[in-house]
Length: 610
Image (cartoon, rainbow, N blue to C red; front, top):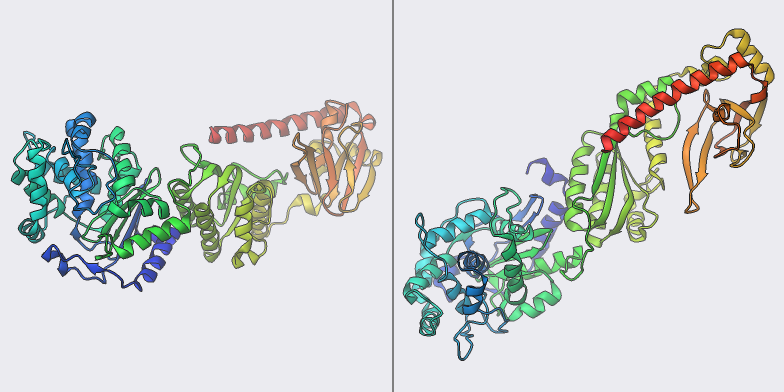
């Protein structure tokens, strides 16, 4: 995975979890199949694969072991595809047995096994795999597994022979099934297939990839190959959910809450539908035949990231990343002079704005934060807008915390904005020591002010001297006065009156008569309106060399916005009825040109958003 792994909060978590689980030494390696006793109880591999195809691994995730009973879930899906749901259910039920994996749980009269996850049901299921013209049943099973894992798999011949030599209980089960006409092929033929199937070599990464296929509606998220037809995925997950952990299934779904399947080889495959698959390998088993460390790994993942299946996420859009743009396309509302605009046209790409939407959960947030972390290598400032996010779960909050922390470690600035409605997110971000830096991650409530701050840093670094600021008292620097003669400019100044305002002073209020316009000589003003939600929305911020109130040249009605001095400000106020016709015509032409350029900018933005 290259550098992506080093940036991922998920990778960091798995490595930390791996280190903590190494301290657990409970359990024993399976010994009823002699060849399995060769496994080193110290082995521990953890892998997680998301439905977006991101792969995370820690520890002995590439260590091979035999799949054992985990194969039952995959073969059950293959049998459904070969024989159809009606036929399969007529011979294998879907009821939990509440008994051990090797129990002889058959319905008294029909002889039908209770479910496909116990040995009796799995033997029956394996017997339904059909031969094709180009492949015998075993080759078809291997081909099926390869679609899930994305690589060809092999059989451990030593384990196969060991299973075959010691599988007397399974032979008894197979003959009972044959006697009840559940099997339509000779018991020894089906058993040989079953023993070989359980002896397929996999690793923790393979299990996670298998789980990810089921989480992704049957499609391998890395190769794009359909591993299982989508309408059978829910059937496989259902029996995994109720029967996959044998007589521990009830406690498992209560504590962990993910469909899963275990095997006596030490593996566990778990699935969180729509998000990811997990594979854990550790050979030491508990008294029920499940990996001790594997259960604890899944339990902690579920707890730490709120991944319980019944912690239901409301439906959301296909992607939470609504839009991505930079400051060259989506600039702040601060009106700037020509020199500043030139700098931002060249350097504005260093400010990246990401708009999120919908409900943030582990799966979608993991993908988006990874994408944003990669973007940080290309930009210096990242603004993440949460205006359209309706909820953020615990797992997403942890990932977002890590995004902020890692961005800061890289010497870049990140702002989380428009999140007033997301109390838990704000609470957890404020709790981090990293957030003590100024300005901190939550410094700006709205995206516009955050983008403006980022632009200001770029402009300050450029160390430009703007004519607008140096000569703002010279009216010819104001766009509205372009083309006016020296005599007209002098006449304009003589007809105006210089006004001074302290920071916070109201200059213009909505509804006031629109009888004059203002040329800013020094300081800064903020133009805003009240929204229907009783919030103030900033329209723009204006500094020296800018003008406000000029719309009254076209429509001398009432003011449509509030203007407040953002700092100590000096303006030249000119009454509209004092303007000569010649000056008014030139100003109207200048205003038309300015509005045309703004329309062009907005059109570019709309094209990008579209």
